[in-house]
Length: 326
Image (cartoon, rainbow, N blue to C red; front, side, top):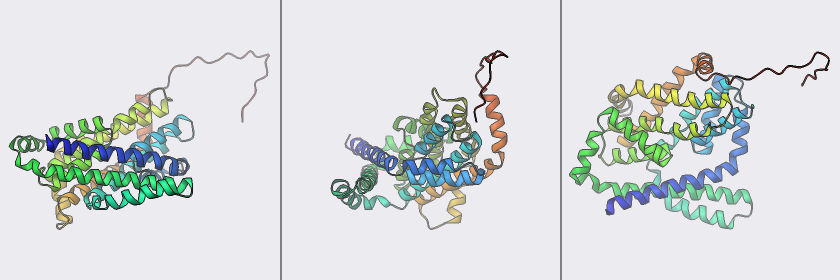
């Protein structure tokens, strides 16, 4: 019970930190991120780069993709550009896993103190918002620290150890990763859990990779919800996010052991936690590089998969003048 409460407290702090950080970043960088995403119309690769940068700036792939869906719904972003942004967001989200793997949670208390002081005593609204960002990051990292401390005794419990060993089955690992992400509504939290368990030796690297792959599917839930009641192109954007993530995960699941061997061979002294973070980068980057040339084909397929709603054509009497909107 004490272990469970410690882990739940760590996850709660982590999720609250994400909420504080995301809300502050939305106010601080939201308009800039939207302006950046609007410029993603000059080619697929530009959209991918801007999507990655916007996701890194906002600290959340879901937030940047939901912004993209809103821009598409408002007619400010075309479907091909939105697809490119989503591909870029998949790369940008891997930055968080690198921070977790580098044991950045040791800076949590310092960031909490500095962030709180800036949020309370900041001379301007922007300074206070920056303080709230630091406060959120501090809460996030401190939650990771608590999670890490609580998870250490788990390996001594046979029941837990046996259950975690079952995650070596790729399908089971992916289902757990997707389920946890749907429940907590944050793929970064699931990846952080996987990194923690791999670091503590509770999960093997291939099993951690399958949990991470499942998180890629689970993160589609909130973006699909964001498409409800939106335009057809906005719905197509959310459907692409789901189809792309599912397709890449289905391809990668049988290759989890080979992906683990690849990252271990490339950086033999990185350690298990960084190996998982590096596998996250390799998986998402390769998927984006393979998919990018097929964006026009994806647009055509999405228009067939999600057809336009039928609408009656208005009849205009020949005797009335017709105004042409410019």
